[in-house]
Each structure stands twice: as C-alpha cells, then as structure tokens.
Image 1 (spheres, rainbow, N blue to C red):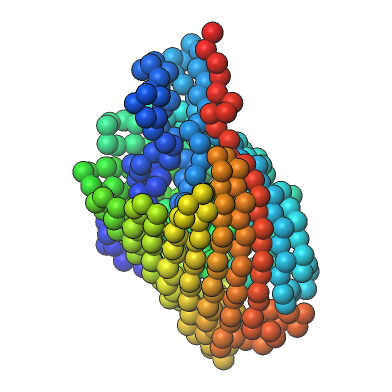
Image 2: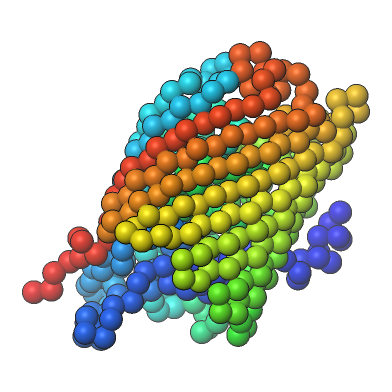
Length: 409
C-alpha cells in the first residue's frame, strides 16, 4: 500500500483555479482605470477564503503593518441560517436555527513571509447528516481558529505552507458561504476538510502542483500523503487529486471518522466564464481491511456529481447540484459502513436560488436525498427506516471587506 501511494503521488489532486494553494486567481475584484489608487496603496492579492461562486466577496480591507513594512488584508462574514428537514433521526430536530458563520480572515500575501488566519464561529451543515449547533461544531471539530498557517514564498513560483491548512481534496469547500449550495453534498461526506501539516506548492506555466504531508481527517497522526496537479487554460481547469493514509489508527472522533484510514481520488473539471459555472467531478474512496483497528472487511465508494450555476440579472443566480454515490460490501461480510449501511447507495438533488447585492446576500437550499440498498435502521426517520429526506434551508448574511478600510492621514 505504501509503495502504491508513492508511485501515484506525481499524478494527482485538487485546486480548481480558485485557491492560493494552486496559484489561483485573486478572489477580489480589480478597480477600473479611473478608480486606480496610487501604487503605494494598492491592496495585495487575497485568494483566501476561496469562494466558488455565485457569491462574491468585496475587496479586502487593507491596514498598514507599521514597522513591518507590509500591508495586512482583512475580510469577514456574518451569516445566520434556518432549517427544516423531514424524517429527522433521533437526537436531531425537524427545525433548526443557528449562527452559521461569524468569522474574520486576516492575511499577509506579499513578500517572502506570509500568513493566513481564520477565526470565529461556524457550522458545517451537510446532506444526510444530523445538524450540529454552532457551539458543538466548534467543540467537536476545528475550534475557534479552524485554519491558520505560515507561508514562505521562497521563489516566484515556489512556496511552503505549514499549519492548519484547507484540504486539497474534493470539489466543495468547508464553509457554507464558499460553495454554490448551503449544505455540502453526499460526496463531501467522504472527504476531509481541515488538516494540519506541511505543503509545498509549485507553479509551472499553466500547471500548478502541490504535495502535502499531514494528519488527514484532523487525526493528529501525521501519516497522510497526497499530491495535486491542475491544468488551467482560459475558462477551463482540469484537476487531479489523490491522497492516502500510509498508517492506520483506531482513533476516531466526529472530525476523524473511519475514512481517516483510507484513500481518496478525484478528477475535477471546471468551466467558469460569463454567467456560467459548470463543475462535474468523479470521486473514489477506499477503506482497506484491517482487523487490528476494527475494520473486519474493507469497503469503497464510487461517486459522481455535477455542480451548475447560472447568473441572471439583478444579482440573482441559480445553482444546482446533482449527485450519486454507491458503496461496496455487504452486511453479511461485516463490511465497514461508509454510508447507509454496507453496499448502500445515495442520490441527492439540491437547488439554491441566490440573491446578492453588494456584500448582502440571501439564498435558500431545497434538497432531497434518496437512499437505496440500505441497511434497515441506517437511514432516516425515528427508526432509521425511511429512505428519503427532504430539507429546506435559508441563509442570510453579509460579507464585508473594504467598507472598513483604514483611512490614510
């Protein structure tokens, strides 16, 4: 297994042209010629937090760093959500309300020494999973400072990052405002979100690549190795991702599920031009047999999704997500359960009408999840026997940036 990962390392991973990890395009807008500021006041590029669209953040607020001779960029977000869901499981509720994001993002993106700091409150709503309140999310997942890292820009096209990093895996980001939809999808449920480790990034013309050694699903066991390769040409980006655990551990929490002992592979294509964002992707995951850690029989998942968004006039957009995923194994084999029981499958459809004016936005998810070939007791409803779950979510919020820019004397 260890040799197989080393052989495949060069062929893989994420970044679909939106993150700083892959030398992505700036998430902020560029002023027109009659709005240009003097050179000494030009804000540095800020590509984090990454936002897929259709939501857009304003340019960052820029503050002078005084004797350090640099500028610090600051963004923030404040959002709340309300949720209704059918066939809720015991311990969950049919109706929920929460502060979904109350975060601030501070970063330095120029010079050889850079950093990124993200702090505040958040929730991680995902389809087919119980909703976790904001305070419990912070306690059971990544704490009030979920992402923070140092970045050393050692050459024009080469950098190193160390700290709590955003994952390279998958086509959806961790926080609701970063994605087309509020709830993350059923493929996202197989992926990690934040990992601690070290990463090297290299840009080579239209290619960007990253290699990372980290703790995978926030396990604090540094045994995950993955790499990424992305090719961008105009509105088109093709990305490959693969990562796997070179060790095994019994350690499990909400942030560190059994999937931490497996491997993940993605192929992601992104088209982004004008009013359209089109993003189909394929995902394969595998958790191997290992009786020493309680995995009597391993299993895998194979899934695909397509994310679409079209921007109409007057700030209105309509994102759609379609997903299908299936798992291997059977209950008779005592295969590890990765979804709705061994050998189960899932289909999900999500529609997210979105309106944004300046930093203010309002949007709503309408979603439906259908489980098939499931193990009785492992799906929805009070007895885990209902194979369908409808859900409606509304999110309202404000993304802020240069409206708090420091004034020069």
